[in-house]
Length: 79
Image (cartoon, rainbow, N blue to C red; front, side):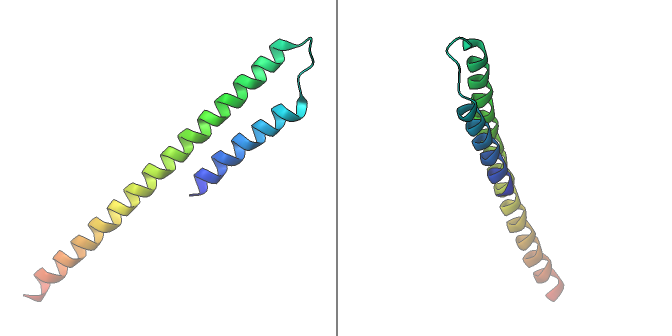
């Protein structure tokens, strides 16, 4: 969950920076580089969000397996 907000914040910051600096009409190379950097930041934010989602799913699976193991252990010790 925290990774999602960090990634989204990074992408938002990059976008605000690109928009805030503007692009003078004679300097198209800098604008292109800034747009490329903004696109990369957005892609990185999406990858971070995806990774966070996978980690969260793995944690849920691990928790379910631990509960199952605990139940199985509890049954075997009662007999």
